[in-house]
Length: 336
Ligand SMILES: O=C(O)c1ccc[n+]([C@@H]2O[C@H](COP(=O)([O-])O)[C@@H](O)[C@H]2O)c1
Ligand SMILES: Cc1cc2nc[nH]c2cc1C
Image 1 (cartoon, rainbow, N blue to C red):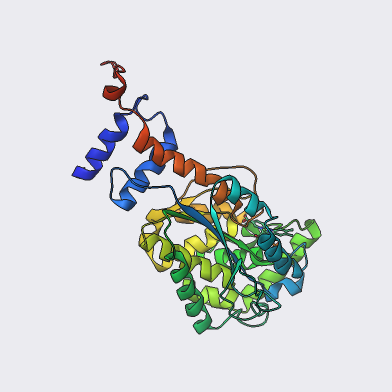
Image 2: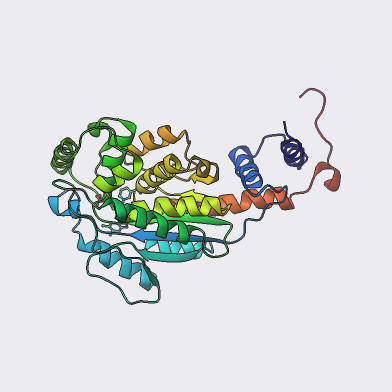
């Protein structure tokens, strides 16, 4: 064990609790200490960034809701009325909303950061969702967003009608899991809608042959918000920030970020287990156990926002909790 690891273990085990009794909260504190290379890491300021983008594939009937909901929900974020706004306020998170390619053009609102790369992706049923230069552009813009500001942690979420179809394709082609095991009901398709979605995605997959690199897969299947979020996760990890990863779509972006830049995995906390079946496959692929299992399937970064107080509490535990010596509490007996 290195001197740092040794000192960290001694610090956490000196706290007034049976050794290991704070379970995964201890692991969160230790991961943060390692990332910041400090025995007293900081974890007070965080933000939630929501990347919004539209998907051409949404016009093929793969979602229970119409594509215009993406734009309408961005306006709801700007007005403060979405679940993400409520959870961000409850947890003291700054909220940033990024237009990563929503149909209808610029919002011209101070609450929305414009990074639009156009009006969303092309339907990937017949052609690549975006060009290779657009993938690079989206990743680079994301990296800048992930390293901006003065945060100890960044939570990432998304909004994009049709994006469970994109994420399913990415997971299918990058993990080689069969589409029928990956694809789910998204916003709430019925059984006939689910069968139709699988059929459309099988056709789209047949259009593209061979093994795909993560960037080639993004180009084929989109979307802009997924590519930008992957870039932002890389940027945040490089800035030594903890990365709070939301549900199925955000975790797919995180898997891709880790394939592009493996070191960013150390910063990632997979916050929640989505009911979307492909999420379990993504978590297995990255070797993660989700922190929470609340039956969420909303997106918007809601699961990541809910996990933030746990991360902050974990680091405060490391910094503020009394040791046995400080509190005059007797330590372990020799039966342990
Ligand atoms: O994050 C998840 O696990 C999740 C699971 C299902 C749906 N969503 C959200 O619902 C939208 C995508 O669903 P769909 O059916 O339009 O592909 C998109 O805006 C996501 O934020 C999100
Ligand atoms: C209303 C609504 C809100 C959402 N938030 C994220 N995805 C969403 C999809 C719908 C349909």
